[in-house]
Image (tube, rainbow, N blue to C red):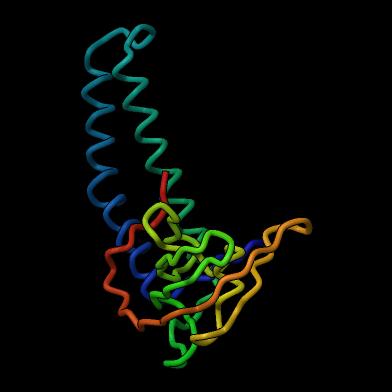
Length: 168
C-alpha cells in the first residue's frame, strides 16, 4: 500500500480539514439536500442532484484524508543547518539555463511548483535533499535526461502552515 510521507504538522492540518468537513461542510451539505428535496419532483430537480453530488464529494474527501493519515509515514522536518532538508528554502543555479531559482522543499501533499514549493519526492527535491551549499548536483529526470544544479544558499525556514495542502 502507498504510504504518503507526512510531517506531524501535515497530519494536524489534515485532521483540521477533516474536522471542518465533518462539523461544518457536512451539515451544510445535508441541509442543502433537504431543501432541494423539498422542492418536489426529484426526476427533474437539478438542485437536488447538485446538492447530492456536493455531499458525496465532501464524504469522499473525508474518507481520502482519513485513509491518508492512517497510511502515512510520519517523517521529521529536522535537518542539519548546513544541509538541504524539509521546509528549507534553497537558491539553485540552473547551469543549463544560466539562471538562479528559489524553491522551498516540502512534503508531496504541499508541493506546488507554480508557487515555488517542490516536493521531496520530485526529481529535483530528491536530488538536492541532504546536499550542502556549493554542491553540484545531478538531477535525473529520466533515463534520457539529466541536468545539473549548484546549491547557492540554504535558508532554514519555519513551517508556518501557510502552504496549502492539495485537495480536490
